[in-house]
Image (cartoon, rainbow, N blue to C red; front, top):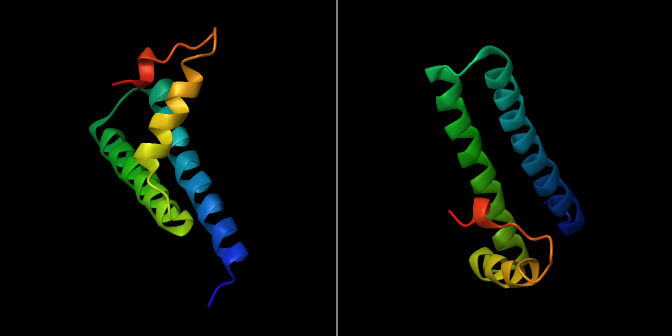
Length: 88
C-alpha cells in the first residue's frame, strides 16, 4: 500500500489536476465560445473535483461542510470580504 504521506500528496496533486482540466475548458469557452460538449465536460470535471474533495475529507477524517462553515465565519470578519458570490 501507499504510505500516508504519499497518498496525501497524490490526492492533492490529483485534485489540482482536475481543477486544471476544468480551468482549461473554461479558457477554451472564453476563447472559442460555449458548446454543449464543453458544458458537459465542465460538469464532469466539477464532479471529479468533488470526488477528490470527498476522498480528502475521508483521508483527514473531517466534515468539509462543517470546516467550510467555520472558515466562512473567519473570512466574513475581514474588511475586504465579499463572499456573496460563493454563498450560492
